[in-house]
Image 1 (cartoon, one colour):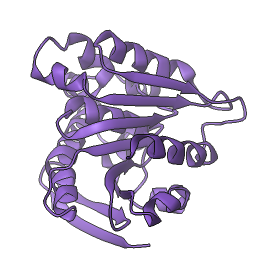
Image 2 (tube, rainbow, N blue to C red):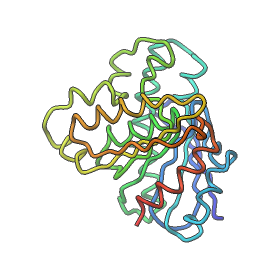
Image 3 (cartoon, rainbow, N blue to C red):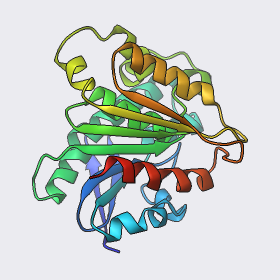
Length: 244
């Protein structure tokens, strides 16, 4: 399987960050790691293997980047203000650095990307689409954690507000951004096993639905835990559904 690794210093994040690509052709999928995972976490945890048939068939190319903001949140590094700033800047890195790099890798064509992730990776996937609907056509959130204030035990500031769909969507007024979001699709899946919190997915769906943004919640069984085995089963199904 074709695999490339790129690394550069991000002026937005003020540190180095990696972007890894698997595959040779097809619809680009930006797959976010969990909390503090690096760009290669999804390969180590066999999500790339789970997508093997789609990759080999040239239906998709998969990209992943280091979860620098997620790592800072999980490790509670720096001040709350710094963590919120890094979360906002991570979104700007995705839009202004990672996606242009994906476009360049796809021959310079500004093709719309599918975002995907699990746990905090689901937060990043949904946030990327909601903040930048001109860049993303759909988002897949698996076992999502969408309220980071409650999870991490901090009170967010303006930077957090600008980063978190649960915060900014309710105040999104009529205009081009909302019009474009209403042409996008968000798929929210959760298990009902250990460590899962289905309420997070339903709360996110309610916020999207209140804005008229198409979405669907898929509950999986009690045998599907908040764990990699669940996401390895979920992700190929949903990517196959969303890719032509």
